[in-house]
Image 1 (cartoon, rainbow, N blue to C red):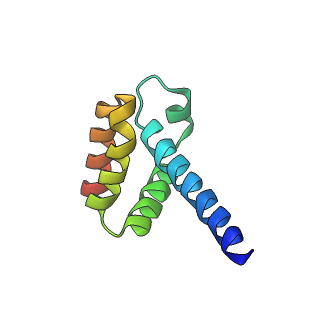
Image 2: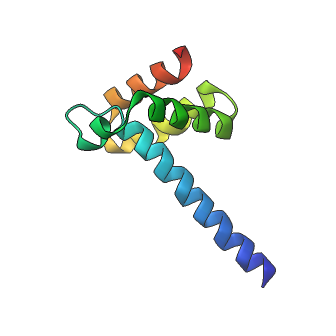
Length: 87
């Protein structure tokens, strides 16, 4: 029973992490309602959380690219990677 509960929690955490990475990528989409709703302070907080989660900006960028490639969001991933690793 306990293992099952931990497994569900782990799956929820993974889904949350995926969604947070996807939201961060969406913040760099052009002509996006979602992107226009994210102010610079919120974007900075999202970036800090991603770097904290993955340890380095390079590892966080790799995680973003893993989502971006299948969705053909290369320009968003490039912008997000530049933001993560230069700011």
